[in-house]
Amino acid sequence: MTAKIVIQGVEKSFGPKRVLDGVDLAVNKGESVVIIGGSGSGKSVTLKCILGILRADAGTITVDGEDVTHIRGSKRDTYLRKFGMLFQGGALFDSLPVWENVAFGLIQGRGVKRGEARDIAIDKLAKVGLGSEVANLSPAELSGGMQKRVGLARAIAADPEIIFFDEPTTGLDPIMADVINDLIASTVKDLGVTALSITHDMASARKISNRIAMLYKGRIIWEGPTENIDSSGNPYVDQFIKGSAEGPIKMEVRR
Amino acid sequence: MNFLASIGRVFLSFLAGTGRLSVFAGQAVSHIVRPPFYLPLVGQQMLRIGYFSLPVVGLTAFFTGAVLCLQIFIGGNRYGAEVFVPQIVVLGIVRELGPVIAGLMLAGRVSAAIAAEIGTMRVTEQIDALTTLSTNPMKYLVVPRLVAAVISLPFLVAVADSIGVLGGYVVGTQSLGFNGAVYMKNTMDFVTNGDILSGLIKAGAFGFIIALMGCYHGFNSKGGAQGVGAATTSAVVSASILILAANYLMTSLLFSE
Image (tube, rainbow over all chains, first blue to last red; front, top):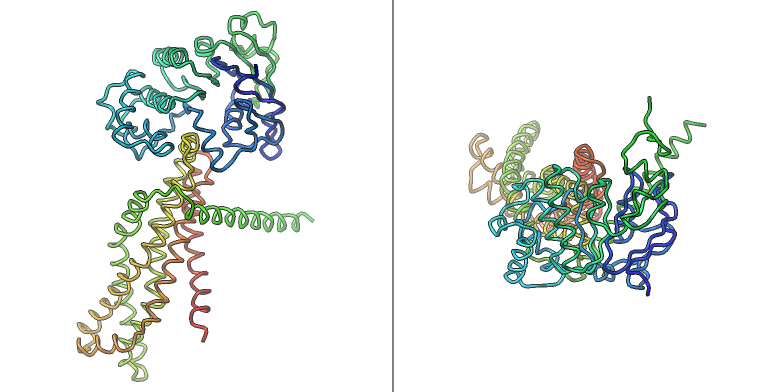
C-alpha cells in the first residue's frame, strides 16, 4: 500500500537561501503526522509545496499516487478540493461574515447554493463549539481563539480527505491552546482524515499526532511514533523537546 | 568597475520587473475570458471604483474647468482672442484634462485602496487561503477590479467632461461677462464626437492601468505593515506615471492625421 502523501527529495531555495534540502516524508491514510522544527527550518515551505502554492525546485510529491509536483491551473483547483487548511493567523477573509468564510469553499469552489451552504456552515461552527450567533459577525469582532476555531470550521467545511494545520496553537493562551488541540484531535479521529501539522509547541505535537518528524536545516533528521519522542536518542530532538539553549542546535544570534 | 556593475544591476532589475508585470497583466487578461466569472464582485467593485469616486472627480473637474477658462481668458485677452474661450475650454477638457485629471485622482484613490487591500490579504495569507479553497485569486480578486475599472472610468470621465465644461461656463458667465446662451452654443457647435470619444478611449486605458498597478503591487507585497505601505506607494506612483506616459502615447496615436 502506498502512503497518502509521499514527499521525496524535495528541494526549494529562495535566491541563495536553501530552505528545503532534500525532504523525505510519507504520511499514511488516516494518520496524523506533526512536523516539528525551529523557526525558519522550512516547515511552512514544505506545506506550501504540497499545496502547490510554492513550486519545488527538485524532488517529487505524490498524493494518492498522483504526481502533483508541478500541478497548476484548473487541475490544481480540483486537486486542492481534497485539502482543508488551518492557517497560522487564521487567514479569514475580513470582508465576509463568519458563515461565508466557513462556506467559502462550498459556494465558490463547488457551487453549493448559498442557503444550503449557510446551514452547513452553522453545522460546522457547532462542531468547533461556536453557536449560530457568531455566524453573522465579521471575523475582526472575534477573539484570537474564536478566529482559530472559525478557521478550523472552514478547513473541515467541505469534508476534505487531508487537513493541514499550520501552527494551530501559536498566539493562544495555554488553555485555549489545549481546547484547540482537543478539537483537532477529535476532528481528525471523528472524520477519519489524514492530518499533517507543523508546530514548535511540543505539548500540541504530543497531543495531536501519531507520528512526529523533525525538520532541521531543510532535512528530516528524525521521525518516529509520538510515544518514542522522549527516547529518540537524537541529540537534536532531545534539545528541541527540552527547549534548551544548550546543545547541537545553535541559534544564529549575534552577540 | 563597481559603478558599471551597479548600473547593470539597476537595468537588469528594471527588465525583470517589466517582465513580471507583463506576465501578470497577460495572466489577468486571459482570466477575464475564462470561467468561472464573479459578476456580483464586478458590480461591487464598480460601486467602489466608479460611484464612490464621483464626488472627488466632479469637484476636481469643476475647478479645473474654472481655472482653464480664467487662464485662457487672461492669455487670449492679450491679442483679442477671448471670444474663443468656450471652444478652447471644451477642447482642453474633453481631450486631455478630463481623462487625465480623473485618471490621476483615481490613481490616488483607487490604486492605493486596491494595493492596500490585496497587500494585506497577501501578508495575512488570505490569498493562499483562497487558493486552498479552490478559488483562483487572479479570477476572484484581480479580474473583477480590472473589469470594473475599465467600465467605470469612461463613465466617470463623461461626468468629469460635463462638470468641467460647467466650471468654465460658471466662471465665463459669472465673472468674465460671457452671455450664457452664446457660451453654450459655441461650446456645442465646436466640439465633435471624435473629441469626446478619444477622451473616453483614454479613460478605459487609464482604468486598466489603475486597477493593474493596484493589483500587481498588492499581490507582490512582502513583509508586514511596512511592505503594504511600500506597495501602496508604488501603486500610486507607477499608476500616475504610466497614465501620463500612456496619455502622451495615445494622444500622438489618436490625433495623428
